[in-house]
Image (cartoon, rainbow, N blue to C red; front, side):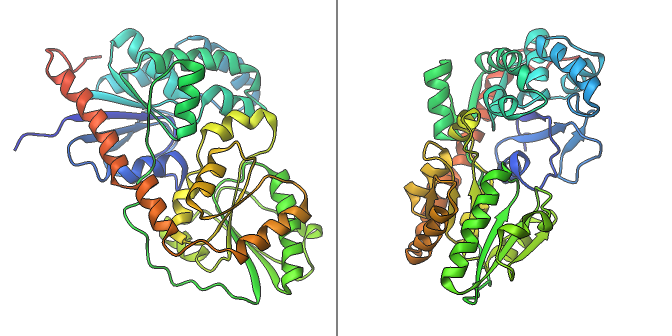
Length: 397
């Protein structure tokens, strides 16, 4: 039996992370049947996920002064010894084609491979490096122009590009002249969960990263008002992604409110833990500097929330991909206010007008169905096949 075409994937993040980009990739790689993926990554420990290889530690982050000395040079095109070793390690792979996630070191490595190795490459974009990651960062905000230049070179030379949302595809087409297709994580089916909301409580859950404390604190106040109106005790459950200090927020909540904090859990356990919630909370920051981020990104937690099959409270301006998805599929409600009274009223409206029973399944099929696996695998297979057809497709270091 002939072997499958081999694709070498490189990411700047660890494959075993419980959510975000790693979960998105895991959801499709294990379902590929026509290509074999070898996943190379940066980190400080090896991975449990199959067919992976750690090739070094991250170049960004760590001690502030050293990072600020090296980061501008790296984004300007300087290839440090560590970066060259990463490129050589990838080049050593016996691969028919290459695949890279355009984030942090992934952009640097991708540019180096295309510059010096002439490697054809497919690129995935899960977050906009310059206008979302750097612009929202305190440390890297001033590096946005350099990151944008490196990002632009990377994507415009790629053999193919997939992006995380319709908003990102449209934004890049209009503002960057870049063609791409949309790829969402795969959800094969909706699980049967045994959680039942307790009508003596108002139970709100959150999974993963909280992008901004300001919005979250205003939501807590609004949830407290809604709980008082309903004559219920407020219960907030946070799983993974952030360090929540209950004492810091106690003054915002009713005296009998309860905050539960759990570390990162496996998805199955997290889904069961949140299945007794009345609402699931998701936010995108309201700040103007986060506008491109919320217009182009898409929270991975949304694919988990539809599996929990509870209404989603989308706390975000209406220009966001999150608001568009929740409104389009009618799986909850959107609140674009930071006024706790307005927030409380929005909570009550969602509880009074619950989503239709089949809304989550319809959204799963449209946004997270098998077509996303097929679309991405088709792109990787086409690239691998085109390279295999030419002599010397597999490169040597």
